[in-house]
Each structure stands twice: as structure tokens, then as C-alpha cells.
Length: 284
Length: 261
Image 1 (tube, rainbow over the protein chains, first blue to last red):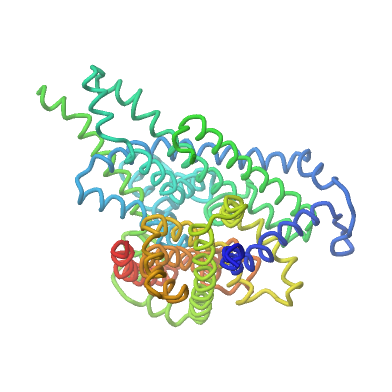
Image 2 (cartoon, rainbow over the protein chains, first blue to last red):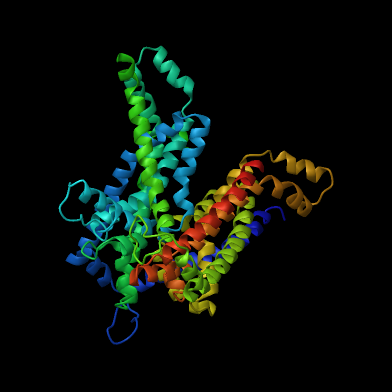
């Protein structure tokens, strides 16, 4: 009786995860080896032709390289911008720290539509930034940022910034102040202490942040649709377009499986990196 | 002068913090300002003050039916995810059994599945359960997305207190059901609340899964369509109303989460 009890507790979660997670993924895998037929819906088959198309066709290759490049760019920008910010939060007074934490978390509670709307007002062609630049005489014609690659980068950076700050913060806050004191007592200056104590101890947070931002950017549909340009196609809108507009369910399936594999690979690499850089975080 | 230069790094860091805080908050403040405009454009500063876009947003049938539907979906998916997540956390946090770590990893998996990929698969599975795209399908999909959040937050709450409290309750003669409801649940209330809130927000703001599972009629999808066809300040007005409600909700809920520890 005691042995079945945990499994009884697991029943409701199982009733969600098995039919709504495992079966859909299984169907996706199945679709990806079926064949798209222009006349009919989706033809049962067992072929890797869709994968070959998706991984060799120039257009899809561009979509993948665009997506990976963008994800890498946004991750690096987020890390560089978030690190000093996280340090600022750890050093701030109690009240200031609370205020800054609220600021960081606020976007998570505001609808993504509202945030995009705000960016239109700020970086749109007639937006606040362009008005300011024109008035100052810094540009002659408005800068084209919104609905371009740059606009998409800004939107993504804003959307995923909290996901970089929060893990960094948790790493930085775990550092025992006595470790820093002993480093100073042993004669290391501020810079050396930061380089040899703070930085290595914060690697787990940085890796976790990069993982979250990278995977988020790769799977994002909304920002590219509302802030990006069709001249820079990326993966999630492409999958939706293949499925809904082109009704190429097999191709969409293969693209989806590749995206899923990429995201899982990122998770595996990140966990391995954390285990190497910070073996003390592993549970015994 | 030398004292000033010694303080320079600190000042630079503070200035940087100010600029970045502006970067984070401004995109949420400008729509509020634009919502009060009397003009028809999204220009800032607003041309004259009026509440007419608020009236327009509240009169918009597309928005109001979308709002009702999104609230129902969010409430339903939150209830489902919370029950499933709390139960799973009890199994994983309170029992030792074979495959415990694996099960935890499996329940956390939906977190790393891109919603667009999940939607693509779910679309083919729905007919198996006699479901079509619509409210129930969307609710179930969102519940799956919320499950990992509830599980992780309730697990954290469970590990924060001493399991001997439960044993004491059992030894004193309370049954397992009574122990669960009057000892365990109150102790993990903060974690449950945090997980439920995360699920609600995630569902209420979801676009990439609703795209496949709903009839394109949830509030975020309606707002997205509106923004793509004609960008008028109505979306800003509606967003502002939602922002006020969600901030009020946060101010009520967040203190309760901390206190329950």
C-alpha cells in the first residue's frame, strides 16, 4: 500500500503530461517522417526526405543560421548588460534592492502586447527616439529600427532580460561575504578578488541565464511577428507558416523536431557546463 | 578631487543602473501615456487628454469577448495545473521511490518544449480525445505549460519546512487526509500561490500555443490582430486597464506568498 502512494499522488500530473505532452511529441515525430502531398492532407510514409530538405535547403539553412545567430547575439548582449545590473542589485541597500527587483520582474507581469506597443511608441519611425534625434540634428531622416532586425533584437532583449538577471542574481547572492573578506585579507585587491572569486562563483548563474535566453529566443513567435522583418526569417514563425499557410505538416513536423533537438541540446550543454564550472552545485 | 575619482566607479554603476531601469520600464510607461491621447495616432507626447480610447476599448466587442474567454481559460488552466502540480510535488517531495528523479525531470520537461512545437503536435492529438480547437483545448494546453512552475515552486516550499510536523500530526491521531489539509497545505500555501499566479499569467498572456488551440479569439490574439491591422491607441488603453488590475492583484497576492513560509 505504501509503495503505491506516491504513484497515486502522481496520477493527476500524469493525466496531463502523457496525453498532452508525450502523445503530441510522438505525433510530431510521426508527421516528420510522413510525406506532404499537394493534393491530399498528409500521406503515411517512412521517409527522412523532410529532414534532408530541412537541413540542406538554402532557405531553411538560412532560417536556422539566422535563428542561432540571433539567439547567440541576444544572449551575449543580455549577459553583458545584466551582469553589472545584478551586481548593482546585490550591493544596493535593502529598500533599493527590493525596488530594483520589482523593476526587473515587472515585465513578467505585463502583457507582451503592451511591451511591443511601448516599443512602437519609442523606436517607431515617428517615435520618441526619432523625434529626439531629428530635433538634435543627429540624423536627417528617421532611423528605421522597428520592423527590422534591430527592432527584433531590442524587443527580444527586453523580453528575456529578467531571465538573465534572476539566475545571475541568485548566484551572486549566494557568495559568502567572508570569502570576499578572506580574499582581501590575503592581499588581493578589488579587481583581483572580482576576477578570481566573484566571477568564477557566478558562472552557474551566467550559464543558466544564457540557457534560458537562448532557448527563449529560439522558440519565440511573437516578437519576430510583431517587431521583426520578413527579410530576416527565423524558426518559430517559419514553422507556423509551413503548418498553417502552406499546410506542409510533414515539413513543419521536421522543423519542429529539429528545433526541439536544438533546445534539448542547449539544456544538456548548459547542465554539463554548470557541472564542470561549479561541481558544488551538484546534488550528492 | 581624488575622493571624487575614488567614487567614480560607484557613480558610473549607479548611472548605468538608472539607464537600464529606464530601458526596462519605459516600454511599459509609454503605452499608458498614449492611452490618454485625444488624437488618433500613437505619437508621444499625446495630442490632448481624453478618455475616449478607454471608452472605445471597453466598447470593442472583440476585446470584451476575448477578455471573458481569456479569463475563463486562465482560471481553468490555473486550477488544473495547481491540483496536478501540488499532488506531484507531494509525491516527489515526500516519498522515496524508484524513478523519483526521472519523474521529476519528466514533469519539468514541458518547460523546455517550445510552445509552437507543442501546438503543432497537439493539433493532431486533439481529435483522439474528441476535442476541437476552442476553450477546453486551450485550457488543457495552458495547464500543461503551468505544471512545471507549480511543481518547482511547491517543491521549494515543501523543502522549506520540517516533515516531522506531518509525522507529529499523524502520531497525534489526525488521519492522512486531515494532516494534508490542516498541516501540509497551510505550510506550503506560499508556494502554491506563487505557482498558481505564474500559471494564470502565463495563460492570460499566451499567444504561441493559443495560435493552434483556440479559435483565434483569446484576448492576446485579438489584441495582436488589432495591432497588425490598424495601430490605434485602443490597444494601449486596454493594456493600461489590464496593467492596473494586475498590479493591484500583485500587491494583494505577493505579501501573502512570503508570509506563508
